[in-house]
Amino acid sequence: MQESIYAPPEADVTAPTTGQPRYYVVSPTKFMLLSVLTLTLYFVYWFYRNWKLIRDADNDDTWPPARGLFYIFFTHSLFSDVQNSLEGQQRSFSWSPMVLATVFVILTVVLNIADRLFPLETQPMLAMSLPFVGTILVSMLLLPAQKAINLAADDVGGIANAKLTAANWVWMLLGGAIWFLALVGIFAVATDPAFS
Image 1 (cartoon, rainbow, N blue to C red):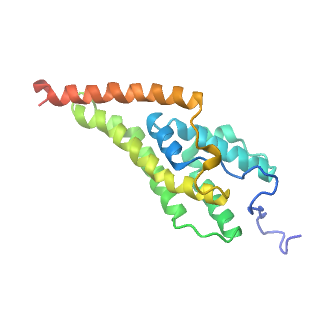
Image 2 (cartoon, helix red, strand yellow):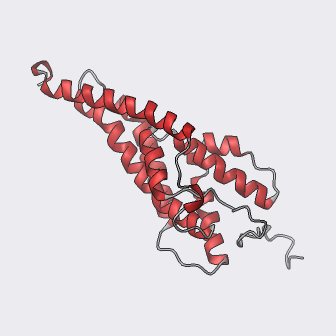
Image 3 (cartoon, helix red, strand yellow):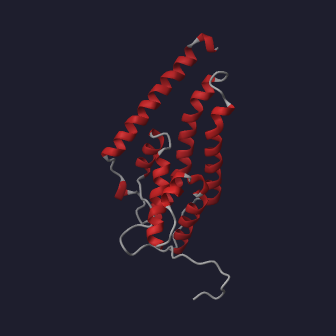
């Protein structure tokens, strides 16, 4: 029983004993491939899976689909949960979860409105290349979080989820086709004298 009736409830964020990890373990290589090649669409699934495992571990009533779809509103709480889990396990990981979450959210929002800031008609090179550079940047920002999650789940290398599945390949090939077409478009704009 808690000392004060006004104290917030405390969740048990120690390592799970049921065999099911508290977080979604993914190898860093697989995480980066899926994040970059799906143009960050993978983030929706990644956040969903993490929140689903947390919900199952805590037996609470959070709704993982909403937390996955609107992940920018739940990034801080996910990173905080991971940090609390690491502290509860007395494990040390070099990251700044709240700073990382803030930078990730801000950059994600800026990139989502960048097409309005840099119209294709007036700044074609910037308008075409910014989404791809941004995809790499936000993926790199989430990578430390994935590494912290892997440590909290006692699978530092993400070995339990390192192999690419058939569905992974389908998504990566679709995203890769978009990458290819965009790079062809950027090259065409860069070499077209009309846009000079």
